[in-house]
Image (cartoon, rainbow, N blue to C red; front, side, top):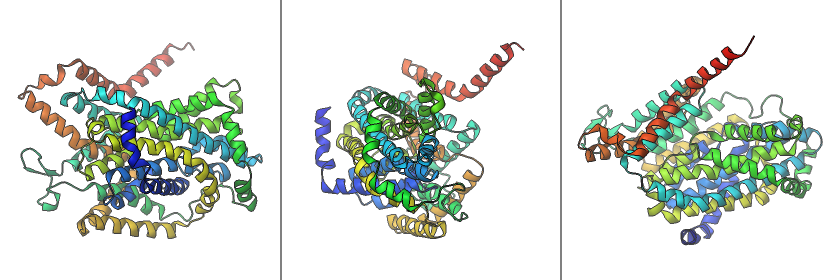
Length: 508
């Protein structure tokens, strides 16, 4: 392990990498505070810019944005009850209550420290165990890797959506778009509609930017303000408090509660291992766990420091946890890691267990950057807390054109092709239709990435089996994986039957 970490030192401790860590954190803080923007669609927007970068620097940049966005939404959530990120809603439950009681700086300080410590601890855990996990993953053959790709897609389609059918519909559309190319083995065109531009497959960049970034901006354009109704007005007193008071008190308050801090970190790290859960679900799970084990659960929601710690420590711990399935199995643990895996494709590297062998220095540089980003959250968070609040007053009519302009320039510049720009706006319309009909976008994106990987391993296994389909069911691991897939597909109907049985058994 130490040898692998040493390989990453020349990368992570270069001035260039440090610059992009600070830049990424700053961008993450900003987008985390802005409703409508998050780490996923921001990384998608930045993807064209990173094409000219080295792979290691691009991934370090994305990791810093990811880490910064997790904390950025907590400041407006606490100070003015306007969560920038979905996960910050849990933070606002106690943070805003503490703020209106006259302790806003203390609440922000607790959130900042919990984010920093949670991210640091989970980053150390990941670096410690990822080598052992990857050594196991390297023993998987094509059959097992095919089923793991299907498991990742099934988990995301069933666990993060209210309607699993819409999740599978989104994944199916993603698979179809991934198949729009020539057959990689036979060379026959598939779903190309006679267009040579589709023969090599659709580029990830215009699809991702369109679905995530442009669609969100077009929907945001109808809003008059980023501030939600009922949000508190920013005053001079709030600014003075953020600039002068509370930073040290927040650190002390958080470190006085090591059990709550470690518990939230472990919950976030563990949930990060499950692809697609997202920080909104994870933060509320962590908040619920903290409340259920508390001796005074009635204090939660009234300005309880443990409630802020439960949400914010979990938030940043989740980042590190999502890296394990992404780097060891090639399964994106979140929307942001899906963008990071697409960066591998853009640099000619196919995600999977081999990444840990062929790109060891890159992987460990990303993991180290998460630790460094977590540590830098403290000083940069103090410096940028006040600007984060004033960003909330930015009007959508000014923000949207600027973002759309840079999206268009960025997508065009990747290949000097207007065709890619048209593809971007087409998928922006697809993204709008999906959002309006409550069809989740993450399964689509992850199917787009996992589709070629699943196809590659399926065809390879099928050729090795000489057409014998029973080859897919011979190993014990593949049988276990198949059972897991079936369980994931039918877990909701089974839970409904169990609940009905309990209701029926309850005496009147």
